[in-house]
Amino acid sequence: MTRTLVAIGTRKGLWLARSNDRNTWSLDGPHFLMREVPSIGIDTRHGQPRLLVGVRSEHWGPTIMRSDDLGQSWDETPEGAIHFPEDTGAAVERVWQITPDVHDDDVVWASTEPQALWHSADRGETFSLVRGLWEHPHRPEWGAGFGGAAIHTILPHPTDSAEMLVAMSTGGVYRTADGGESWTASNTGIKAPYQPDPWPEFGQCVHKVARDSANPARLYAQNHHGVYRSDDNGGTWTSIAGGLPTDFGFTVVAHPSRGDTLWLIPVTADRERVPPGGQLQVQRSSDAGASWMTCSEGLPAPSYTCVLRDAAAADTHEQAGVYFGTRNGEVYASVDEGESFARIAEQLPDVLCVRAAVLR
Amino acid sequence: MSDGVRIILPAVLRELADGASELVVPVGVEAVSLRTVLDTAFVTRPLIRARIRDETGALRRHVNVFVDGQDVRRIGGLDLLVGPGAVVHILPSVAGG
Image (cartoon, rainbow over all chains, first blue to last red; front, side):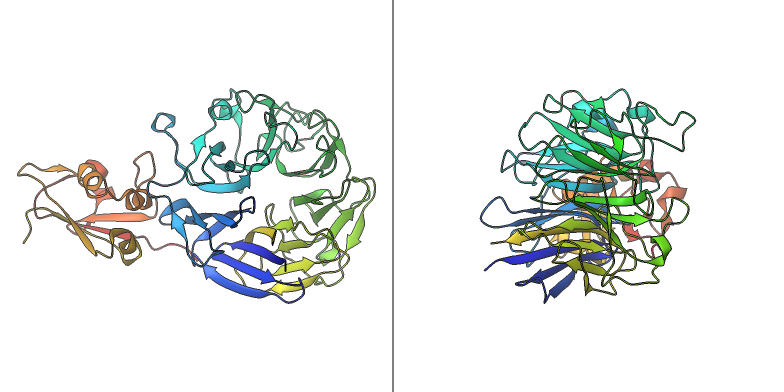
């Protein structure tokens, strides 16, 4: 039997939703009550799944917790899993992303506020700073979006272990082709409408990037106004916002196994962060952004909530499940790839992060 | 009465100290800095240290430390000299919603 796990990180704790059929869900939680959970990694590469969770207390700071029994018990590395070397003079504010590698089963990547990328060779028990990006000459000019000065996207390349893409708000997209030693800004074609020069080399407020599952050179980016696709591994970007109700939003999710299929959750505008027309909705494309379909069956209207950049995910079933959580504490699931949604959790704190996995 | 410095932990941190509600840091006759006292207290308990101070050594913004009832941020911070018999309270600030 396969089970589906949806991990829900909120402003005040973690909940774990489980289902054997994706229709009936049990909700377990809260874990880490009154601590925010902005990042979750579900590592299914080994026999026993490992949960890695970025946890942060307003009082007691950030840490990474892990569980090898699906949340029945939690461990914390005695010396702390992630902290800046003394010479940097920096301190981790928040762990924004935890991403199992696609080449080495023991490697896990993490990213933080302030903007830093981290490498773990022991399945997330200890992390070391990726100096090549930390010492990038652009660093002093990277900015802080309202969410904080963070790297929020980590995309290892599925066929080349030396390649990786990261993205930050604000700063934009950066790529390495040499295993993290050197990094190049990769924002050609992405507009920064809030800057005097709207086409800078870097400084874009990219909200989230997803990689196409069939064509690794194809990427999708939801920007702070602007939705883009790259067909050359991030070298250049072109708009795919035509046909969308709005080009603002925070999240983008690519289908886990079918190329050219992706989902966005649109937000009216920078200054109007509510669903377009008051209808909570998902936009789906099956042709890499050439056309869009509005998916709203089962979603509420009027709605004045918002979905944050990491609060959406897909599972890896052949018919992918799509999940997202809202700032008013509701979580919705679709088992027909967005045709319709059902609410699987409500009355939670603001949802910051959703991750889904199939457990076999 | 101890000759050391007593450190009173908030309930939320006691599980990281094997349930202890307070720790005693032996000090000599000479006063030492609060920084040294905290470093000594948590040298074998790095997770408590990380809850109270970030990796640069700074006190976390919403953690308050009192020495003999006074907020150390107003009387010298981590450089404050403390001597035998001093009582250090570590408390979360009033914050959140």
